[in-house]
Length: 77
Image (cartoon, rainbow, N blue to C red; front, side, top):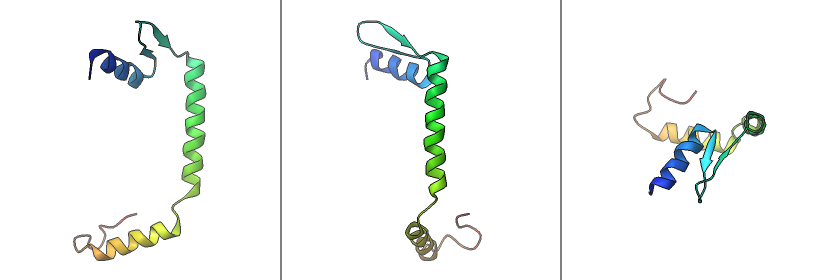
């Protein structure tokens, strides 16, 4: 990766700014960051509310039974 890309990744990870080609820097205001946070929380809450489908729970149960190292008490909670 070039230095320009690693700087962009570092800035994006910090959440405040990102470098663009041409040397210009874009800074996200706290109001925009808050709005993004609200949307991400809403999406996450929606996914959590959906729960795990029964077919996935059945598959996990079968995997636990088939795994000889899972033992009692070592399964999922």
